[in-house]
Length: 481
Image 1 (cartoon, rainbow, N blue to C red):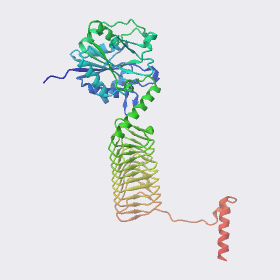
Image 2 (cartoon, helix red, strand yellow):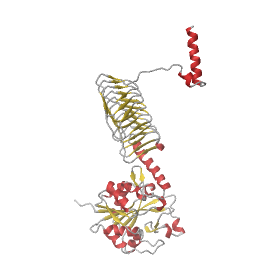
Image 3 (cartoon, rainbow, N blue to C red):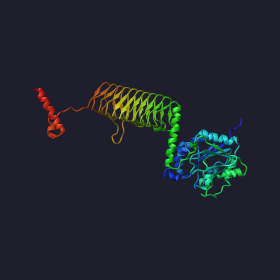
Image 4 (tube, one colour):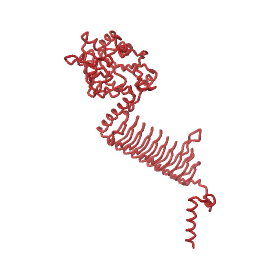
């Protein structure tokens, strides 16, 4: 059995990205669940590389910290002085002296690049036994991009940066995507011959194509199947355009996998999200981070789920949720806020204008209206009345409240933690409970009601309330006669 060819990936991520006008390095700007650099590293996985090298420079400490989180196996190499792409690749390969075979070079700001395209580029390069292959694309507006100049037979003659191009070359719409496959030995030889005789005084990686061709190494072009894959990002406007393109790609893929997205233009789904068939997502919804939604669940409209798990058949309506678990057939919303540590059992209900934090609701438990539930365990089939507050924080410590199975807490109640309402117990509306309520008991802390007759007439004379009270009293007197 023949051994698969050895490969090395080099990702260029040293630039500052001045036009982003940001304290964040360009390659670390987020785009639907990953950074620009993270998307490129994901696409590079198709290369099957034995080693991946990321060239860092501007704010290298931030880029390296990010790499340690998302791709700890890569090798960062510092380009202290940004002397061009050729210089960057040369110092990258110095960190891989034993490498042989194919080297794939990628820009760190092309987040729409597909792994399939990387694989096809490598296949075209290796099957053609070339010294170098460039990924190209035909675009409507090539401004600012390097041009592919072909010879009379249609082969690659050279790659010309726009700043060094004549008017004739600038009219070419086939552009260099900044993505390449090289024979490593041939590349090392060509890199040693680069000069800085150009407008920027830099070592251009693109010059190696002409150098290779001049010594008889075959060079070629592979045209990307979708020009959008080659789009880079130089400023916030371009980042927004890439975000919209990726949104459409992600949404179309999910719809073709059996997910209903009622308004794709207002639905944003991170590439890290997992959905099952027959999920329905209504308009103005965002599914972010490690969110997963099981079959038959309905999300939205107007919902944002971050790192949230939603069970089969659940309904999450006009809700903001972070780090929560919504059980099968549970219902949430509208206008609810599920904070981290919220866990809802099967058929549990969190209704309108309810906030939960570090709260577990058992199967069939209900918090229907206008309540805050923090640091609490609520048993199966328990009911929490409207306006209930779980007072869990005393200014220093947070304490836990337990409400037992099938307990009933009346409206406008304060449960002052730590406290336990045992199974089957009732709490009367308007109570402030700070001692446990035994199973099957009724907890009441209401003060006796006292009516002060004539108070409005004495204290609020001339008001609309006083006039209404006077009319009502007169009507009562007339009825009594």
